[in-house]
Image: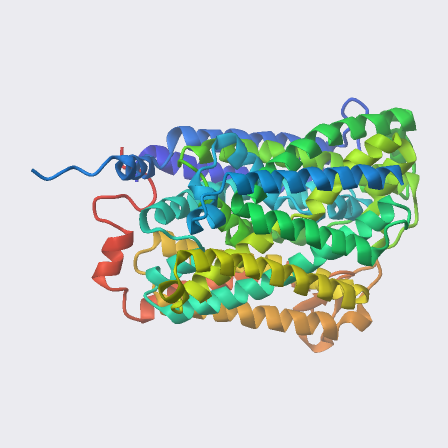
Length: 81
Length: 523
């Protein structure tokens, strides 16, 4: 497997681990903008991080071979001479 | 009264959408069951998300946040924001490709070919169909209760359930998968738009969320709702296995076959976490606000706090429109009925000779007939067992764990060429056995279940902390059983596959052509 796939796999493991924010467990403040408790702010950011992670996967690990299959399926059959 | 009229207008609109989809239909089985594999990127994103956004996401999450605080967002939503799009990326795209290449319309068809065995496909069909039925019944019950609540009893439970059953049955019957997809896309847009408006109006009416949050933070009893103190670290960690269930739900797997191109998945994968954020964060937040507004509700009673906030703090028209959107989520039964219909038609009727004997049109009509049968049976169960709702709630909770524990079977089928039918059979039997054991443990320990806020209780004193009973669940050393179910399923899949003969060379070459990479492109 190429280096970039290993790096992406390690990145996903890091993001998965970051979900366990034990340091926020009992914190009730300060509230961000007077509205969001720390634990909720963190996981709001985590959702954005998940979206960025997915964008990285789509950009660098897209299964392009499935697109090739799709294109081949849509080509008209070659007529035999 | 007025909110229920708005809901009826909404139901009429989605019925029209279903009928309009019927006018676009070609009559083929691919068209009825898979919308001719023609959904573009935006409709596909909204449909896949709408399909997975059930009543639980809206009503259940706010009800649970009412009891357990903001940690519910991290527990259920943010982990789903990573795991579900990841499984769509890894599993959904491959299923789509296999479906297009080999003509598969359900995942059971794929399993039958991949494992070179009819029986394993039939077993997976039976297990998944059984796990789906409680969802459909709960959807009918939810429809009846929501209409009853929105109309202040003017539309009774039995009538509300009947109306929901008839509307869903009609647009699925006529519109097929295209009707389901369009209705799901519409409901997602509607909920995002009107949910934002209602969120703002509730805040304005209550004098601002900052004021409410300050009051909650200052109250020693309620302030724990702003932290994760009411959720244990073990539960928080092990719950991350639950989103693995997403791609094992038949309606989600079948929905993946409806994309026009594999590139349609790109937008879905990237935007899915943001969609979850937009729906779940306000729902959880409103659950906390409701705890301040309506204190003292017990488990189960808190499930309708969003409806209470709406009716107390918004204009009746807005309450009606958002009630319609909530109704739409409650009615996510459409894609589940569609999936069961497709599975019955393909995996039973066609597979056992019906298609050859009676032809493709009969297969489509058989699918339509099955839609009617499921709707009637589910409605009858919703009426007869109204008082047993907790049993269905329990079945759904177990269903999530069961579907999640089947994920190793799918991953092995797609990415491990050495995996075989014996490994798959062992994994499925493990899932069936553990679900049965948990069901028994849950019922066995109902009498000793602690009240919310109290510590877990050992179910068998001589086994120490092995099986613990919390107010709602059975845990294993404090962890959710789903974690052990998934790890056990993967273990049996690997061990039994390695101890038994590999699949035939023809099957391996069919699903893992030597010219194609199994997981990632080579360039």
